[in-house]
Image (cartoon, rainbow, N blue to C red; front, side, top):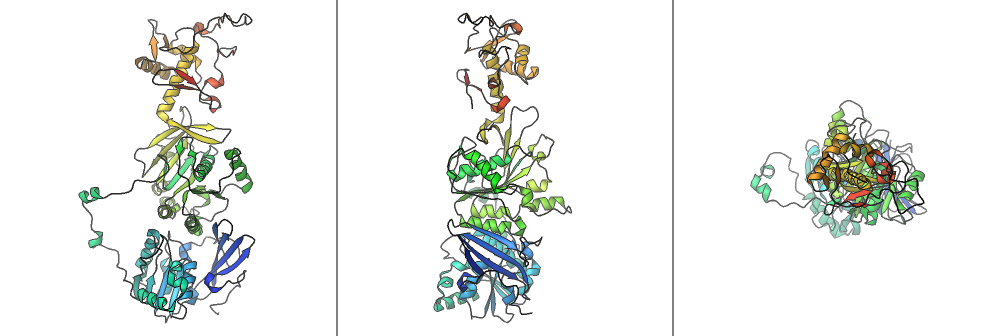
Amino acid sequence: MDKNKGPAPRRDRTPKELGGSYTTLKEKAIVEYQIRDKDGALVAIHEHVKNLKTGDKQCFWRRPDGESGLNGTRLENLPLYGAHKLDDEAMLSVVVEGEKACDALSGALEGTGINVLGTVCGAAMTPSHEVLEVLGGQEVVLWPDADDPGRTHMSRIAEQLLDIATAVRVFDWPEAPEKGDDAADHPVVQSKDEKGIDRLLNDLCGAPEHKPAGPGPSHQPITAAELMALEFEPPRWVVPEVLPEGVTLLVGKPKKGKSWMGLGLCEAIATGGVAFGVKHVEQGDTLYLALEDNPKRLQKRLRKILEGRPAPTRMHVDTRWPRVREGGAERLDEWLAEHPSARLVVIDTLAKIRPPTRGQNVYTEDYAALEPLLPLAAKHGVAIVVVYHLRKMAAADPMDEISSSTGLTAGVDGFMILRRTPGSKGPTLYVDGRDIEEPTEYALHWNMNTASWTIEGEAEEVHLSKERGDILLTLNQSPGPMTPKEVTDVIPGATYGSIKKLMWTMLGDGQLVKDDKGRYSPANPTSPGNPGNPGNPGNPGNPGNSTPEGFRADPTGHPDGNPRTADTYEENMQRVTRVTEVTGEVERELL
């Protein structure tokens, strides 16, 4: 079989410098790269689609028959790009990252007797040993992208090539003008100047040999004093004190608002507005992958969040994405490279992007599920939030509520756990992670009208202040002092033990006073008892509001003497009262 033959590409060829198979369709440019094995058999097609109007770029994998996806083939097992052109008699083989860089360098070095190949798995992964065996007996030069993930990618390849190639060298391009530039950006590759190409060939042939990893002077431990003398940059926050850069799991029970939270975060950061109602955020590009939605449902959700505001141009959405080990990580790497100001990526949900589980080693599979995303978050300085589910049963440790083995929680940088534990006063968001010094649980408020979450403060303080507010409101509505039992009977959902203890604490704090019969009153009453309402002779039905122990009926006129839903915290998700620590007064506020 002629190694240069195979299924004809579906699209017209471009000039050689563009590489691949190229065409334009309305406002889109499409480039196809054919991945062939050494014998020339077509294994996969990598399709790059660029929106000519916005500059956005997407990548897709297809099988030789044109069907989407790789049918379970891992990217690490795909051949090197250009393997079918490999000349075993060539003086040198250069390996770069990606098809575009490979085509550009190959075009510049045409006729020099040098092989040029490209990895297709992305910097987050490493070609398998079997894939690299095509370079057996060759002298190999690795040309990494000019960033840390690119150099790490080639360093891992170099280690595997030590027992395959006759020599392994690593080319360093110190003059790379921008972080992340690759071989296609080199001025000699772009200009194809003959003298420049000669200099480049000399540089490639003279590149230093790779030194095997192992014990040596460069790998010696440092002293504790040396460690303490080092200076590190503080963690960068996407949402201050809540969401740092890195890979974070956002977990909660199904249908409890996780997707709304992720969508709201993307909108807030894309506009440079306020997240969670109180956290001012730095503006940047965001990507929301609604992999369980369709465009119609996603549009409906976004319309509710926007409330008539124009949709932010820096917020990007998609409802389709390949799994992380089937091109998803590489495609995300490319999107982030195209959007250097990106701050946040939300993936909804984990089940749609992780490899199918085989049940052989649950811990290992869970740990590896998101592993390719970690270097991407570090490389591009973004937060990648992955939505996942809680198990049904509550637990004392929030981490134990996550539906997985400990491998999943060990393999990410942080967590945001949306939950409502039995007996709690409302929903909370538990935040913890490697860059968060102290785990924090925030009290949340859900606004049904805007489908948005608001942080009210730390849960323990907020819920305690709510209970105090309910007690003060009850006592202020009463014409006379009340016992803890009477207060408990009036407040919905209250328990006698907690009310009694809290009223005793409020007595010590100076918020309440107590008479010799064990009854309590506000230290600073804000509403008189108004018994009998003598100023309203036309309302004989309210002569004094006879309720237990003289408790006055609701001052709004409700006939049964019970507080309306607007006077409680839990009903209708409305927070009504707030106690000021300075005066102890009750301020009514409707959210």
